[in-house]
Length: 431
Image (cartoon, rainbow, N blue to C red):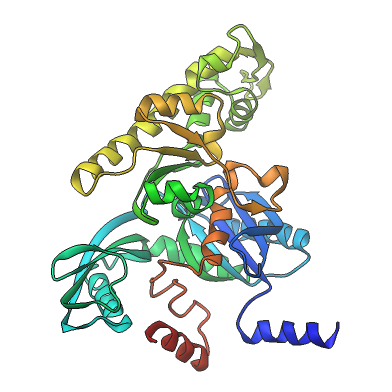
């Protein structure tokens, strides 16, 4: 290595820029790890290593077997490390589950008819966060949606303006403390340091939405194996997040019950031949569908694709209808939510899903996968890995909106930090 290259490498290390960024998305059906080469002067994600593994030991966002989850994490991370040719230690952790919720908070400070500074903005944000009184829940990230000066709202950046009182409206995304700690503990046992924890639906939105959708408004529906989530964006911010505990795995279970077969066989049938719209299949097409015999073993059998569709569609309709009711209720209770729908997630890949979603939401629907991301390859350039790619996007953008005292980037990471690093962060935050 030349002396110039050595100096550049040393300068990056001193500046705290790791050569690689890593994301670990823990879902109900799979665990995905993506490694990106730290880009210079660009906001695009370039993947150099990827790995995934079936989720074991976690169900609907809660840990059921720590040893099994740790092994799954290790396998996924080691696969990504081999592809990248590098070892990682810090990861941005994505979590999902039906218990992730969003809430609006308000708070303010008296400015005294003076010019508003960064410290006033920080104090207003802290005043809003102090109203979050749920000791059994952990704040993951919070986003200031707008400021008001003496009651006049609509202000994006109040710094430099003059007012008597500054107030802020914030959206806070939180999750239950115990499940989050258990997941973080499994990640730590795999010799990884979770520097931040981000809600997977939020990350999926960062990955699949284009700039116009983020500004003008769009709702991302992330259809996973165990949870179906919604993340609403408007004017560049996340404005609502919710989820229902129903996913693609429930449809596989329905198929297993209806055909009298095993869950694994039903999952394979759903993946290879499933659809949710009869227009996507030939009614008389017949496929192999093994069934459990009298001795408990699988025996040869057949079924039509039309029969598979009739078994699968009601469950997928239910997922979307449950979410549509929650979005409608939130629109009436808080603020109107965007009607433009963007579908992503592994379960959204079922043929005919766009037609079903348009019927349920009575709005235009777009199917999406990770955008502005290179190096994923054919296997990972699918909607199933939108959340993992979004975690890297979140990290490259500086972790905007992270204020959690336990996990947020603006606070001390789980592994602690030096006094010099803490002092530097404090100076950056206040000056």
